[in-house]
Image (tube, rainbow, N blue to C red; front, top):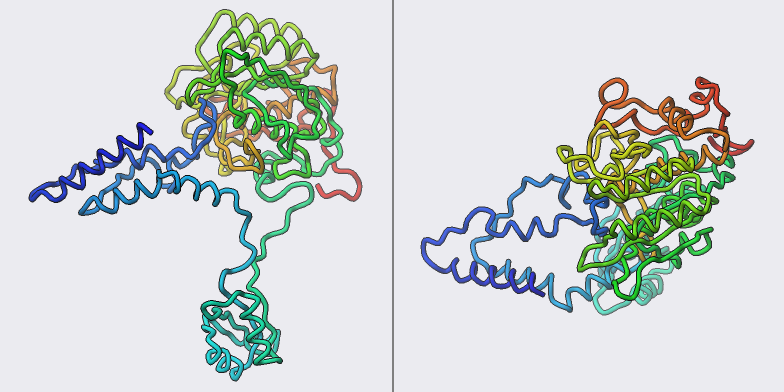
Length: 474
């Protein structure tokens, strides 16, 4: 409400000032209206930042909003965007299913005489073209005012019985087996098999400390998830946006809109966060408690898509987990390339993930440093939304689950492998990015699941097989 009032006062001042002769608005006077809405991320934490481009337009953050010559359109825009009615309208639009057909249109197979007759019946000829395949003309017809699509179609075929007419339906690409095109993009980037039984049958036990998880989400409702909520009555519960997305990336049902990398794995998840205003956060007390719960349940790897400052108690907890031969994967953080290293990522015995886009470019806000180990998809990754469905997510938080899943898979397939052996195998299987060898931007390089077998051969390690079963596509 305070933000709306502030915008209202400023807009009103601009409206009054624009009527004063000689008044010249400052460039960027209303720049706040652009920048405040530029980050379309819904995570609300340090590891779920906005998209690669830095603004919704995709033109980066350098553009300046230039107000019109009078303030009325700006004032109207503020009212239209922030009134309760506008919010309800936006909410309805967000929940509406995709359109099935073009509104107010029929498509018909016709002759030239049929078109003339259709115009006489009140139809608008939007477009028509001779189509050899049907041996006649194909037309898009706008229906007469006051008629429904069914009534309009009936009017046309009654008057012209030889005409074939129907709604102008929409068609969309069909989903690929076990994976729609959107989630497959990130998997293809790192060669993660989408139909291999080797992946499907791998069932490691993965630990996760994050925010709340919507266990009723269609991607998670029937999955093997052991969930503990540490939030007490004295604190507001955390949101379920971030945790739901990360959990589904790891173990989402294969037939859902956001299938997981290891849908048959067991997830041991703890919500260590609470809500404070618009901020999801955890303190060291709750974080270490959560790590203790997860580590006590014999997990193979723990995903920590969270960041904060150096802390002696947290460092000790991380070291204790390493002594249990449990691997930790942490996000590099989204404070920017010039920020100091964040924790727990910068502690020894932690495997650190940074984020890249589909063109192998590092995420513009990803942290850098000698502690970075692997790059993984983290820009516009298709992941579960907090209530239902899915949306694109960006941030090093969403790169970490790819590394976590790769480690979990290898440890499930070859439990005799040590933490060092697993990490060495992953490092030997990467696609080198940036400077040759390890560098502070990409670490060893881009994770490549399809190279693990060769890497295991080279290191004389047990060989996990990613080959598809007979009859399955590779």
